[in-house]
Amino acid sequence: MPLTLLPDDITALAARVVAENAAVGRTVAIAESCTGGLVAGALTEIAGSSAVLDRGFVTYSNEAKMEMLGVASDIIETFGAVSVACVWAMAKGVLERSNADVAVAVSGVAGPGGGTLHKPVGTVVFARVIRDADGEPDGELKFFEGGEGPDGRATIRHQATLCALELLLP
Image 1: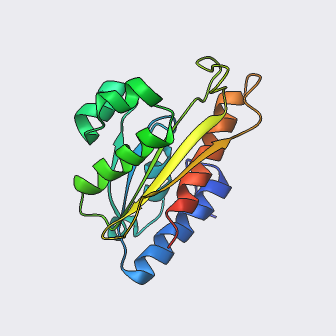
Image 2: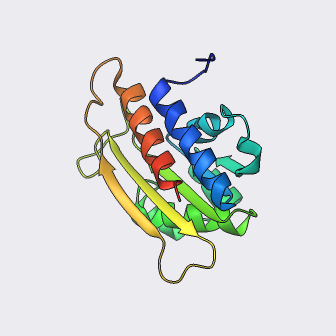
Image 3: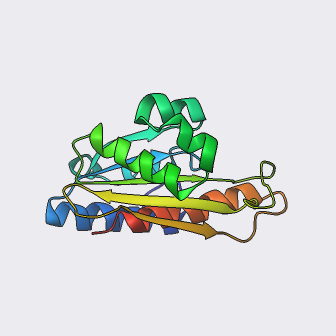
């Protein structure tokens, strides 16, 4: 197997995302916060990804979410950056600012700090918007275990990257 920068399970899933989207002629775009570009990085590990990946946004700060993706400040003030409302707005913003057929957004608390009673470390939210689809975008809040200890942050980000890649499958 050729050298890859990311773990094998992420690279294998990214290869599926590229192959399956290329087969149906679908392009994707991503907005990432807690994953910090890992989803886009995973896709670009795959030869031929340029036929599928339109663009990615790493919007780590609230300001970046608002400036780059058009997330309304009242969404962040009311619900927080780690909320289904915020990732819906992020995903819609990506679709509006890209040529992609589908957009996925991810935001979460990777730790070790930053968690609260209502949004503990390991809380990650995802949204997917498909161009010209009727209805609301898909949104999901997940809690990933294993955020404690020295490997906790990497564990959360790893799981979040896999989940975001799964949402990019046709």
